[in-house]
Length: 179
Image (cartoon, rainbow, N blue to C red; front, side, top):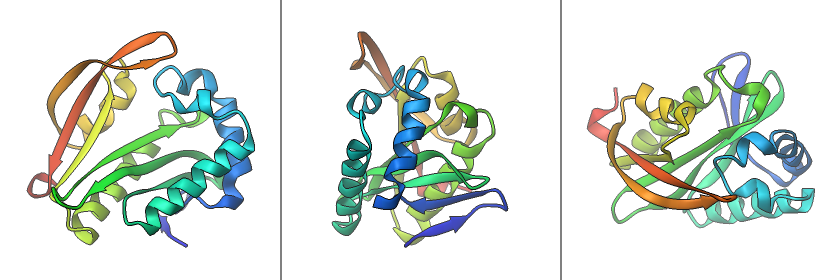
């Protein structure tokens, strides 16, 4: 359906129903790490939950309001990246991403984010991309910082994940700032 090869080991492709089992297994194997920062692992308790997520993402794609792609590394699903929404009036979007435990520290999310940023500005003709992350998630924060995003602010106690409240840092990148 949609596939972008980044290099010989790394590519992005739209998540499809046939990926539900692999997606669930990755989430399940990395549940402790991912659920420290994000709420979806606690709502993903079966392959059917992953399938429902994929179908919802495909509906959003058909509605022209965002989508999620898998990040594949050496033929294995390593994580996911997506446009959480597309605000066509303001011409902006927000990118979210996560990786399984064994794929951290390889630059995969950064490379995937570059593809999504390029797509945002070149093909979608958006004016702004945001990435919002938990303030204490220094690994995730490093990605927008590395890519030249500006820290625009923070929201205190933005979200409760498990029993912990996390502040949210908002990063923004304007089209004319992207090199």
